[in-house]
Image (tube, rainbow, N blue to C red; front, side, top):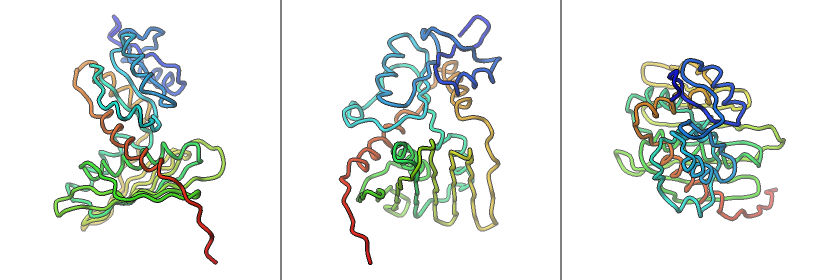
Amino acid sequence: MNRDGTAGIFTELPGYAAAVAELPASAKLTDDMRGAVVVVPGAGDWWQGMLAARSRGASAVVLADPGVLPHSTIDRGQWDGGIPVIVERPRLRPDVVADAVRARRGSPARLVTVECAAPATGLSGVILDGVGWVRSLAGAPLAPRAAAATVNGRMALLEFEGADGAVPATVVGTPLGGLQAGGLLQVLALGEVRTEITVDEPAGLSRVETLAEEGAFRSPPRYESSARLALRHAITACSSGDPTGDLQGLLEDSALTRALLDFPAVSCKPVV
């Protein structure tokens, strides 16, 4: 912490610099990692970025929009850095997840489906967050059961343990044309309560709709930026010393997503 009670934020990402400007009472930019909340970009080998931040004395790490790590990194297992790690996943915001889970009021899902779409260069990150949505709605570890891949997309069948036995979940990823950043997610959880989640990243839209016996309910929109939300959580984690489960959830999702992405694609002849 700085003498004025603000937390030092080390970042080179414009979105986070803007988020710091929106938190003048609690955050201030710094050019020194020691004692600061360090924002690590999620592109490339972000694991090494976190290790570098820790070795230079960071008090916490914010991992910004991470991609899927290679097997060699995933297999290393646990993070024992001794500092909090907040994972910013714009398509899997913790406040939106909490809205979706809370609206179900403990009603178990009997089936979860996730459709992901994005330009090919960003599809793996969208699938990663699609897997995270299944895990969040399931409230239980996921197990892979089958996968299929073609040049036009990928699909995985997962399972999680529900109150009455194994519950199926599917994740479908479809590459889109163009170079526009961001992706689309459509999540559906079925049971006594129906949950529909739409995340349209290019449009800046996150919508949660719940249909229960007493009627339909739409959660109020969230206007705070994902970067600002992550910084607030990191500052709170620094002051409280409480660990977070963000990184462990991300590593679990990465392992499943990597298995799906590594599944060899096959060419399919068109049906006429």
